[in-house]
Length: 371
Image (cartoon, one colour):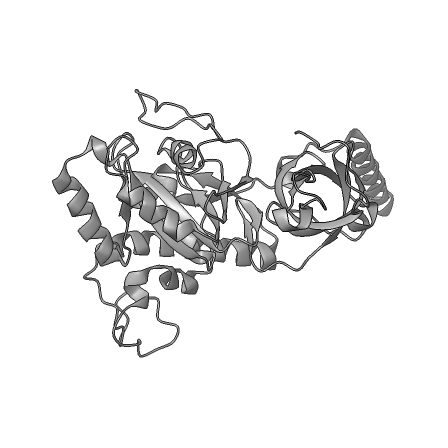
């Protein structure tokens, strides 16, 4: 980081900025140019400071997240440091990845290497829909498949309720990249998706000066290798912020069973409401959703998974019976009961001796009565 010398006077001691990265107990806070313009032409303040969190915020349990709008005080311009004194109210909050004030989510999936798979794609889409953010879908590595395969996937996803952008970083025609840039302008966008689909390469194309590290796909397992280790916000040249996130292969589904259908556009776009408000769309009487949509079997599988999880939680709450989750193929989760601790715990010698003493006493008492 370069600092202008000498600094213009007077220097501001309190500024508002955005947390762009979190490293251990330190926070990188970036500031917009209008707030940092120097009083004379050619002079400017540092665009980013390394900050700590005030003890008062820690004491009241106020966390600081990437994307937070914060107030920084006691700025040490020569050292490039400051202290976060206030966190402004958040508009949105995501837990995984942990980021605040995002306005939309861009899911990136590859058409090939690794192959596009319905269950994994649907799981990411449902998780993204559950955040309440606007969802953009990008299909990368279009140069690895034929034009017919691209069109088939586009038509297929349109029936799901999405209009995907098909992009390639290798082809000469970059109109799709430009269209994506238009969607990202003046927005705070979270880029997500499984590992190996080209998220870091795409960000490098959108923000050339970053030069993020990229990795190849495993040849044996056809899975991507994790290259992004933490969440960080980057400024887009045309305006807006972009959050790169670590790749996940199977995001968790944590919504209530009755809310699952709301995260499938096919269900939301049905013409008529169901007869009963608590309809789970399993061919109940008066259900208007029906079964003639491609992802219906996927919906039923996850619905049963969420019902099972809800029942185990209720059982644990009422009967204090602990369970532990076990992952299966395709991201399915089932729960096994924990072993009873008391049943398999060895009795202490002290308790054994006390039991023997009571047994002897009762035996001697019985003999006295016989005498």
